[in-house]
Length: 171
Image 1 (tube, rainbow, N blue to C red):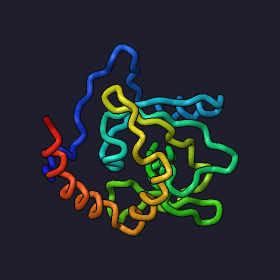
Image 2 (spheres, rainbow, N blue to C red):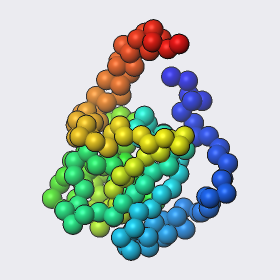
Image 3 (tube, one colour):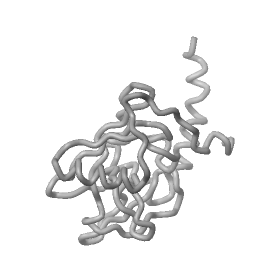
Image 4 (cartoon, one colour):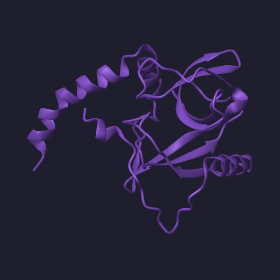
């Protein structure tokens, strides 16, 4: 894959958007989620591709009392960097969770305590259209494949198999 395609791109800020520093974004998200409201913001980076891509607008909702499940995509405070990250829960270890990006083969974010998880991603919008892949029942299988290091190879193999079919049906 072309390395330039994986680099984050610059995005213009639309009239309805407000640019914030990482600290301000995190603080605002915490306040909004504490009120029981949803928080929307534009994702930056490719660590969750192809399910969440650079520039997608994601909606984070407050957590239910039960907490996140295996396969849920969550917004959390990274233990080592104290920064906001959005990745998938791939395992549970008591009161903590093992979290990993879908496009980060074999590297986890480590064990994240439940108190560091801010909310669950419930909606993804790309180019004005809702994206449902990766948030439905398939999320558990994605988590298993991701944790085992199979997600990237399976995704690449599927893309190679489907590419000829896509060309055949494109007008």
